[in-house]
Length: 307
Ligand SMILES: Cc1cc2nc3c(=O)[nH]c(=O)nc-3n(C[C@H](O)[C@H](O)[C@H](O)COP(=O)(O)O)c2cc1C
Image 1 (cartoon, protein in one colour):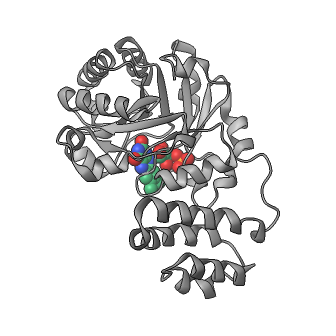
Image 2 (cartoon, helix red, strand yellow):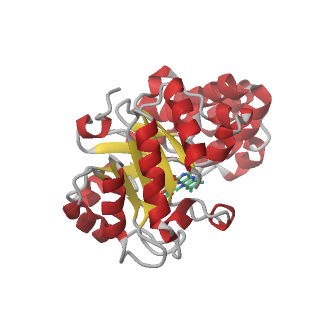
Image 3 (spheres, helix red, strand yellow):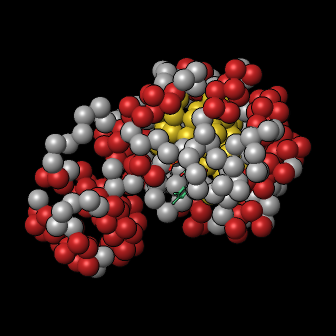
């Protein structure tokens, strides 16, 4: 994929958000089955961990050929680590590298990663510069409106652009808001007016038509939580009923089994299964069974009973 990935993608660019614990290769491929044009991001992976060749983190970056265009998301605050991580991502065949400057989790912020970089914009820009010169891959940044307001979003966006980033994704909430209130897209529209690089909007997008409504002057939108248990969020047409969903749910389970082996897959699929059946009138009586599944056959049986 050429350096100009972001400039060349058809508009609107539609992305599956990076979500730690959810958007592994199996889930990304499940979403790609529904809409092969979406851009997918890996779960965030520590640059320091990759620098130290941590096997577990290297495994987290595994992906399948069908996932292109696929972006590796990395977090960290150390340029040397980012450079090793970027070079590693390049050898794996990723189409881009996204730098996490938005994660609000306590552990991440305490160690001055994620959204904490918004408190140190000069470091943030230096990191982008170092990575951009070390790799041919396009660098993007994912962030929030700001620490406690959107006041410095445009300054930050310009800094990111000048440092060499080729795209910025903004979740329309501040760090302080966490996941409370509603995502506000107005500061994103204002940001887009000031930047040359593409801007992707993120936060509370319920489905494709909601994304189109909120798109405004932006280059695309990114969907996170609404895809959990609902990869069809990326489809133009939704399955009419639950039985039409079963084949893809089973495919998800099989992909996970291929990726992580039976034991881990059967543990990890459970939270997805609960999300898949959420809202079904008879789901509650099957929930306790779904959180104990140990085989694909068993999953099949329960889903059939839920039809
Ligand atoms: C379980 C979970 C894990 C997440 N992990 C990441 C992550 O690894 N990297 C990241 O940039 N954002 C992460 N996010 C934030 C999402 O990418 C997204 O910005 C946020 O959920 C808002 O979008 P939504 O309203 O469409 O879910 C995560 C969110 C959730 C709910």
